Image 1: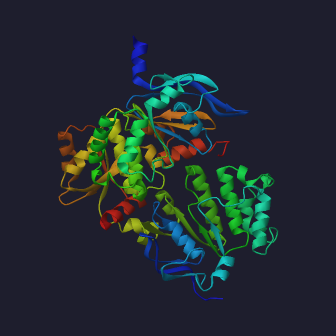
Image 2: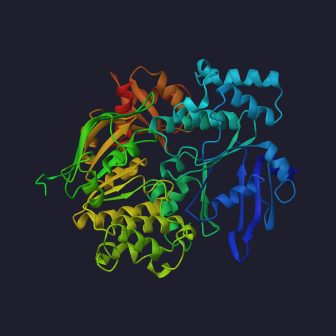
Image 3: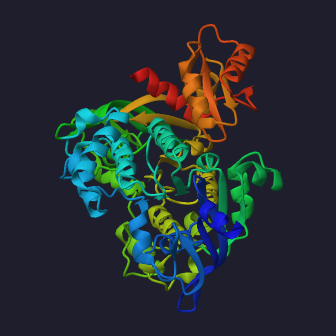
Amino acid sequence: MKTNDNKQQLIIQVQNLTKQFGAFTAVDHISFDVKRGEIFGFLGANGAGKTTAMRMLCGLSYPTSGSGSVAGFDVVKEGEKIKRHIGYMSQRFSLYDDLTVQENMELFGGIYGVKSSELRHRATSMLTRLDFLSEKDTLVGSLPLGWKQKLAFVVATIHRPEIVFLDEPTGGVDPITRRQFWEMIYEASSEGTTIFVTTHYMDEAEYCNRISMMVDGKIKALDTPGNLKKKYAAASMDEVFRTLARGAQRGD
Amino acid sequence: MSTTTLAIEVNGVSKSYGSIKALDKVSLCVERGELFGLIGPDGAGKTTLFKILVTLLNADEGTAHVDGLDVVKDYKQIRARVGYMPGKFSLYPDLTIEENMEFFATLFGVTVEQNYDMVAPIYKQIEPFKNRRAGRLSGGMKQKLALSCALIHRPSVLFLDEPTTGVDAVSRSEFWDMLYSLKQQGLSIMVSTPYMDEASRCDRIALCNSGKVLDIDSPEHMVEKFGSPLYAIKSSNMFGLLKDLRSFDYVANCYTAGEYHHLLAGNGFDARQLVSDLENRGHTNVELKGIVPDIEDVFIKLLSNED
């Protein structure tokens, strides 16, 4: 059963995924796979169609045409099930400022149906790992931005999703916190969680196992950072990005 | 008219919001014609400093001068001379490109025709769409309109608060090219950014964090005075590598940096020893090389020294 094995290995597989808004084709027949446990970087210029594509992968929007699955569920028919089985962290900070650290974890865990006894256990162990247990009764609004971001990641994975989508998770964060954040990503990945991440920091693209680059609604390149640099004779991902995005017709 | 050669002068400025110290005794100066960068993450105090300098906010203590004028006493004159592009898009979405331009020109008692040469290199790029409402423009076009509106009264000092945040790498680079051409026209520019890789586009930079200035210098100089040997290292298991490196006494600091980790050598560091120690712990394909630090490395070192 080779095909079945293959399916087990792939947490995302989409073929010719397309989204049209009237006459405008925001996402234009994209096809790609993401393997389980992979750190997958989803890059592109402003307006390339990243957000629209990501919304379809997260079950927030249905494709106009095309097919595929995320975490074993159909992107065309099972948006609700996809939502329940993934983690999502948006670029805009999304926890409740006037709830405590613990309360935020219980709220989001509860929404995803984690039992309260299990939830308390997970919250304690996750906070202990971050050396943050002493702050569990602190209001989130009074935490420094860097901590909020780390906490948002913990909350986005509290229901132990197989895949977590991170939309520009490190914007505006200081370089040390940015690195601590990436260590959390590495750690989650080493434990088998698949990471799907967008970023404007080109050095962060280099942390990814593989990267796709969207230009004008299409995937223009997809490979490991090393191979992309070789292919475009570039010293950094920044150069690769420039080469690929320079031909773009669309702005955001 | 003042005779000072400084475009901006800040002396011991502090500002608190309740218990939060947004600015803590900040001092810096910007020469005329200089492109000066405030580099730091959210919460560094960048926006607060801008607001004080463009006279929208008073400092709790300290003094500040723009174009030789006091930000408290001479606020009216300063307002006529500075161009300010806030971090949040703040033009009128219901007015067209052209109407926004005319509105801001009128506020300052000039006409678009009169100062067209000043804005032309930027404005020409969006002029074909001049009848489009500002609210319906793309991010890149909004940015160009905001910059044109900030320039239309021919300011002597330009303040740009995070003009490139959330903008992709190619557009960011184009924006810096525009700033460079404005600098060529003699404008003094203070610009803030959370992207450390943009530091190299500035004449001088202030690295700031949590209301404090960590250092002020040219980007080249900051790198030169880094002072510790820095290495890039990778292996087949990057996360395990990080943990192992941190367990060695002769590694002073180690952090992720993309394809490689960066490593600051400590006492007793020996490259060959390191590679063999790692191989003994099961690492394969270990690659180690000496590198020149970038501004992020400098920032991390300064922040680590703070703690």
